[in-house]
Length: 136
Image (cartoon, rainbow, N blue to C red):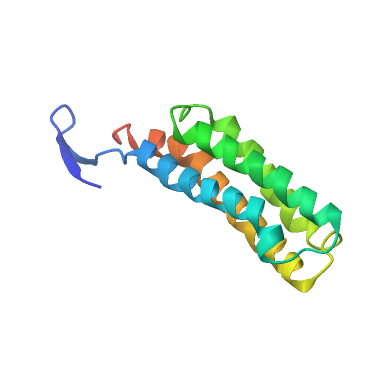
């Protein structure tokens, strides 16, 4: 973050961070997390169909929503909030759905990652918006 001089108030103010770059980083992470969820049933050998289907469907949804945000819908914060809700659902479902310890840990860890990255992406614009106004 750089500093600029505000000639009207004779103050040094922080230049706004590039919130789009933050959205790209966070959404890119969620695209990877979603892709991992889609392929994880075969890599981790899920035995039960429910865990397999949930990983594939929710992984596809996470990847799609994050990809939409990544490729031009950066002002649609609600896409990331939907992903945050999916992340919470994944993490909480780790307590009752998975059929193995690997599936349990996968749902829990990926759910937390999806939630954190989605919240980061959704809040990037609002946080930078506050820093754009110089203090008076």
